[in-house]
Length: 161
Length: 244
Image (cartoon, rainbow over all chains, first blue to last red; front, side, top):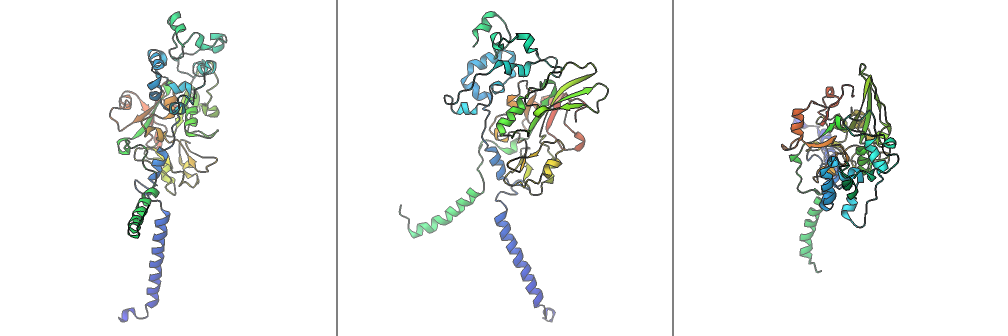
């Protein structure tokens, strides 16, 4: 064993390294989150946390499950592609508590103009008007049913809410 | 309740094991959703966009985006017919309240371009994160782990599309999650839900029945900055050559 003669200081130093490595492993075990690395170089639990955020737009399926009459009217008209909450706003709170949270009545002067005000930047096939010249200040829903905006006959326009 | 010493000695290690699972993170909230069955993207049809700003407002409502910051926004391009390299682009307040009316330009064209995170398959933003706080999920959505993010903003600089920002009060990176809390519950994104013309369509590229496949087959669809090879998954239909 003459080879390891006077090598005690090397073993002590190696022991120090091993000890430091063990301390590193222990600290690492505490510091690195449990799910880190499950799918990649990130904390997998974050995916579930992000997925758990609350929903504010209920989605038109939820609206249509109660308001089937409005959905039926909408399905016949040009506004078939427009989802309920595109105009009425985020209403998941109303779905959760239908009587407690009541949606506000919308102002068609603002709402209709937002999409239908004429500008050269819109696709040419899209129906556009100059609101002032078109209605002279008369509310849009006087003539148009917002759920099915085409004016077919006097009774159809008058019969709608 | 009467617990003997023997029972306590059995219960304690069991409780310790259960606590491990509690610490491991929030359990999956949508039990019917399997990440391996989806690969999300989005389709934006320029020819349908009317610049109403519904998507911008819906996004801000759904995701509590602070005022003056945008996870999605709409730009209005004005380019001349002969000088495509330098279009004039405006986006007042992200197009949130729409755009001023313009008269037709005989020598050029106006059009709207909605922008958002492209949820790149090879995203530069996730590659630069020094701590692993941002990542692409197994179903193809680029997300930020805000409890892990340091707010160093490397990712904000790395995104070639300018889709990230540092949240003014949380001081961490924030961005479009493709409404991950909605799409995992079977809903579409808030911007797609609020878009009145169908200019935005959520697309599941792994679902063989998704209409996106027929659309990609039959239309000349592009992505933004294809030369950067980001693997962008927001597909633009009818994209003008001047769009950057």
